[in-house]
Each structure stands twice: as C-alpha cells, then as structure tokens.
Image 1 (cartoon, helix red, strand yellow):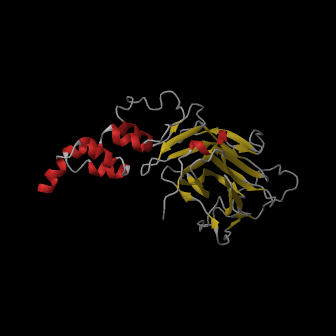
Image 2: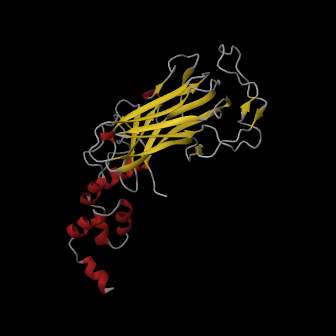
Image 3: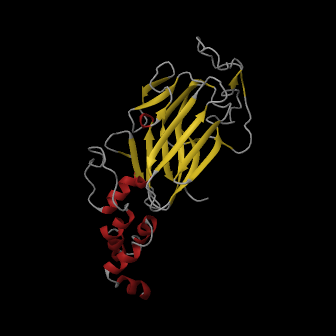
Length: 297
C-alpha cells in the first residue's frame, strides 16, 4: 500500500513521460492503476506519441466528425484504430494499428490497375454495401488475369514490417480461380519477393469450388457462359498461400510482406498475376488490396 501511495505522489508529467515510451495497450492498462495514473495515461502528452509522426494524409470531409470531433488525442487514436477512414479521393482508406499506431491502408479496386478493367465484357463495376468504398470490380471472363497496386513508402510507418492482402469475394458461379495458381509479387526499395498463391482454397469437400470439367483454353472467347457444374476438387501443391475468412465477411489472400525501412522514399508495388495458363476465369469480386502491419507469430 505504501508503494502505491508513493507512486501516486509522482508528478503527472513524470508519469506521462514514462507511459509515452510504452504502447497504447500499456497506457490503457496503466489507467486502471489509480486515479492519478488515469489522468497521466489519458493525457494528450502520452497519446500524441502514439499517433503517427507527421500526421495522416488528408481525410475526406466528415470522416471524424460524427457524432462529434475527437476531444482528445486518445479519442482520436481510438477512432482511427477502430476502423478505416476514407482519404480525400475516397479511393483509399487508412487506419491505425491498435498495438503500435502503425499506419495501415486499403487501396480500393478503383485505385488499382486491372488489365481490361474498363471493358465490360471482361470486368464490370458493381456497388458494394458492406465496404467503405462505393464500388468493387467483378470479374466476368478473362484468361489474362493481372491486378497491380502501388503506394508511396512515405505514407507508411518507418521501420515497420507490413503484409499485403487481396480482399475479395466470389460469386455463386465462379470458376477458374484455383488452377493454375497465381503469382503474387511485392517490390519495396531494393527488395523483391514472389510467391505462389491461390484465390480458391482446398475446403470444398462438397464438390463445390473445384475446376469445372468444361474448362476452355485460350482459344476464341467463349460465347456461352460456363456453368458451375461437374466440378472436381484440385489439391494445391505445398507452399501455395490460400485465402482466409475475415470477420467482416470478405476473404483475404496474403500476397507477401515487406519491411518499410526508415528513409525510404520510393514506391511499394504489389501485383497478383496469372497469364500463362490460358484458362478462363470468372466470378471474383475485388474490394481492394489491404496493407497492414504484419503481426509477429
């Protein structure tokens, strides 16, 4: 008890300075120690250290206004870490990693380069009701699959390891997304990485989601839409990354990771490509590419 009393006598500025060297989680825990600690742990001096140096890119009008503008640095941090806020062009969203304060982004489908993306025969644009973005890209029919995105390194947090994810859904009659597997690449500074990935997993035990036997090669464009029937499950080779279900109802596929080192002033380029197999593909709905801090373990 005496030790607790002694701690309570420490100047608030000293406690704040110590907590500012910890983490957002530690500061929240410290707020439960005593009223004196709560005042220090909730102070702007602490939470200003957890917000990104230099601030964020300009946000779209009204993104942090409801129900009222943040009244403190802590409230600002909690809002930015609770979910994505749209940037001014409404084609990119940003939020903060709750554990570290690292800046995270999602590049919307409209912000990406999609080969044949503006040709309705191959891709079409549909409204999204479960996304911060107003629309997504739906794959109709392609045999040349290529999606690319990029972000400036200085928009990201320094000395932070990031991972990039394709965020997507599939329609009821999708096909061609599992074979051949796709190639994901990330280029950041002088580092380039490539891995094999697959937009469709191996969990279709009921016969749904495999390769249809009426697959067509890259010969004249099929006039009739291929039906999702007579599917056979395809087993993927080892070291092929498969998608995971997200809490928001979408799927995500990790495309790779990279270290954004301090002082980098270039671009991070991300791609997902399959152009060699010649098989037709359909039924993919792309929300965007998410770039967030890679959690250890």
